Length: 417
Image (cartoon, rainbow, N blue to C red; front, side, top):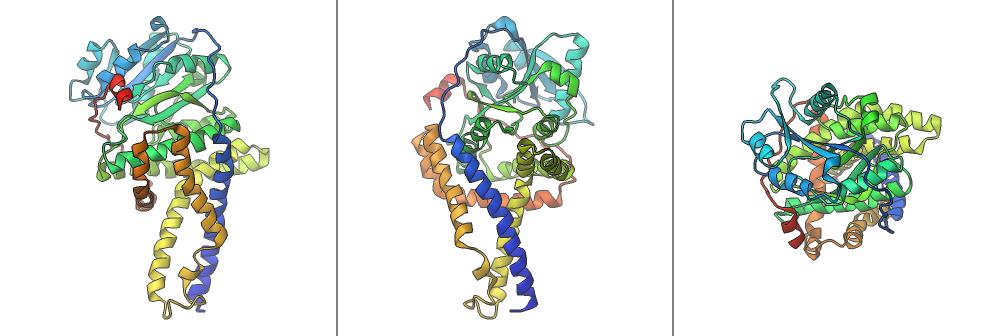
């Protein structure tokens, strides 16, 4: 065996060990997501909410969101809806006012992005002397389940300070891209987020359907203006000892991209932001977790490692493929790195992880059409490789790109789908 293959063998054994352990860790935790019992609402309405909706050129979709908020089972006098018309060039502000929202027009071309808009809005609320118990954030393309605020009130009254709602999809069957994203979210919601909630581990914040105790927000400040403002804020919470909790029955329906190009750009932004957060927090948080014996911090550090795991697997697979064709004797296991690529345990762990996807669909009782998209899912998951690889090499980019939303679906129409 040549020196090159010996070095490759050593590298790939280390790669298999690290990625395999992370996958095994996820499998063990996911077991706790199998059993779900709806949490009863035990507290009467008492918390006052400020609902914040950053909106950049969202005239097409913001109306149905505001209508769904009017239909909350929560008393109307206990929440206000604030729409940020952020650098808009369309009729977003007029449409929001027509649907009863309080509109705040923001013009700042130098600081563009959702994180900056939220920080600006929180400063305005403070200047206004507004008295709220909690802030709730939605994206303009969302639809909201009628019990959302009632569930958040119950969590706040129980002592929770940062709560993430269930991230569902309002257009899962528009294309193979949207259904693949929907399947990914259904899996994450049940066997990642809910499983961690049962173990009192931190959930990851999704940027929408998010509820934050207002006194805590005033104490911490927002300070999350990167490409993944939700991840930034969640990390700061965990490092302060505050565990973001998961509200599995508080549903928010989000519009997913329908084209591969739009999906690629959106995921690229997510991964760029993820790498930026990982560079600053992964190692310190992991070491803090070991030193303090704090599993919440270790778990968050493992989550920050996920894009790196995806990138290493993709790069490793491409190198294996290339070396396989360069090998003088592809059938010789001693000189063929592809033969060293897998072990039975490594294969078993990753197969089990993939088989958990249809299990999650079954547990979440999703529409039967989703199962027909499962054969396409491996290809979609593979595309995370080039997305993550490009994100790594462009991780210093902090330019925010708007995702165009088009599906003006109403909540009652969603229930009929």
